[in-house]
Structure formats: C-alpha cells, structure tokens
Length: 154
Ligand code: FES
Ligand code: FES
Image (cartoon, rainbow, N blue to C red):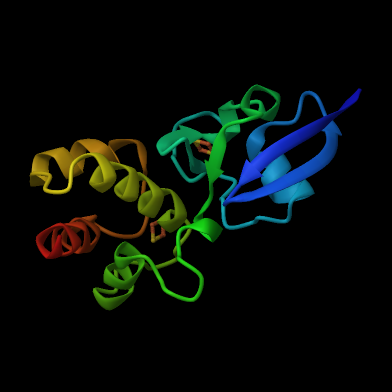
C-alpha cells in the first residue's frame, strides 16, 4: 500500500507516493534521489544513514517517514548554504579527513548538530558524539581535529 508523504527536506516541500513500509533512508535515496545519505548496515549500528530531524541526528534506516510530516529534515545535500560549504565541510576537506568517504555525510551532520548545541566541545564530548558514526578507513584523528578547528573559530 502506498501513501502520500509530504516531507520538508532541506527547506523544500516534497510530495511523494511511497509504500508505507519504506524507511526514511529508502524514500530519500529512491524516491527523492537524495543519495548523499548512505545505505550502510540498516541495523542502526553504523551511522552512515544519519540525517537531522529538527536539528537532531536520527538514523534514517530506523525511521518511518510517515512520522515526520511537519518536521524539518536535513540531509547532507542541505548542509551547505547555496554554493557556500559549511565550515565543517571546509575543515573536513582541508584536513583530508576522508578516505573512501562513505561515513562522511553522517559524521558531518552529527558534528553539525553537536556544534549547534555546544559550540566548544571537549575532545571527549566530540568522541562521544561520534560514537554512533563508524569509520572503517580512518583512525578518527583527522575528523576530531577538523571539528576542533571549527570550534576554535567560533
Ligand atoms: S544504515 Fe542506518 S545505522 Fe547503518
Ligand atoms: S572514510 Fe571510509 S568509512 Fe570513513
């Protein structure tokens, strides 16, 4: 069975008919073509699918979009301000944080949500924030340094 979903994503209203059992991750990628949100474990363990709902990180693989009408969804495609990258995106690029890059959308959105709430986190607070975002390639050090760099500039 399909239903009409009205979703606010990155400041735009999308109306889409989708199967009621589809997760937010599937609707974003398959129906809205927003493929920046990554399809990882589908078990709530890797954080690759993280998006922001009203500014807070949520795992889109465990979320039904029908619950999100009238909520503001932010994906990695909405993190930049037009052609201006978010400072975290700049810092992640400048410090060469990514290897394969698969974890980066979730990492960046989790870091953004943290800095929006806590502009000057300790290294331990950064580690705790990123605990749900797994990276198979890096040792996390550059990622943490990039977040600290942005925090120091605020
Ligand atoms: S794909 Fe959602 S937590 Fe891994
Ligand atoms: S850069 Fe490859 S998983 Fe993080």
